[in-house]
Length: 149
Length: 105
Image 1 (spheres, rainbow over the protein chains, first blue to last red):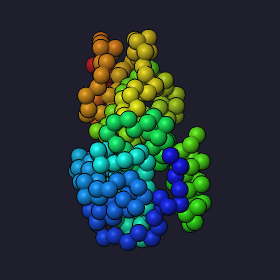
Image 2: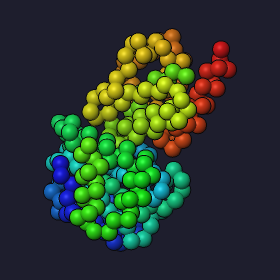
Image 3: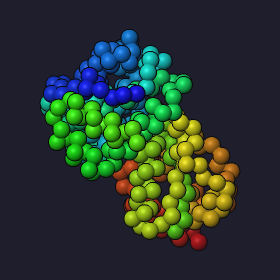
């Protein structure tokens, strides 16, 4: 998995968490993750209903595990308007990583990268540095450097 | 304090490693020996051995999922905590567990 500038969406303008998840599912089609955005959207929603994937400091990590997902990976969205997402610190969400995996044979290397990304979100430095970057290429380089270790 | 534990979340994807890392980091800050096994999509990661289990003061299960190989922890105090709480307030969770097992003694 090589996270690329094409997997990054900036200035995303959505009004609600559900509208965001629909947007993310459509974006996943163009990025080659699935051909079934409706089912992917359902998978995101189901996970969200189980327990919110909102973290703290404005981050959320919705994720889906579904047969309609063709490859393991993630997309990054930076929101224009903060969303009222259920988070640990009750702060609105401005940055979202949407994680996707097929149910079987996801491949340990790729899963490890998703784990690295998730645990990076526990680090203050990672979150601060990520937000200072405004070019898609620089964001992609930074994330690749962080998850590839 | 010697603490072993297991983290597991519904998709076995993101929150499992996050909880493990948060708890181990909090353990370092407290100067405790904390080792958390991850039971996620990758299979067991950072597995707890029988020897490590035997040395533990308590066992922390950061999950409401089904955990495998629980027989390793027989005879030990086992405390289950919601995985999100473990990510959000790992240090408080560890301290509270330690207080809880002392009261039982």
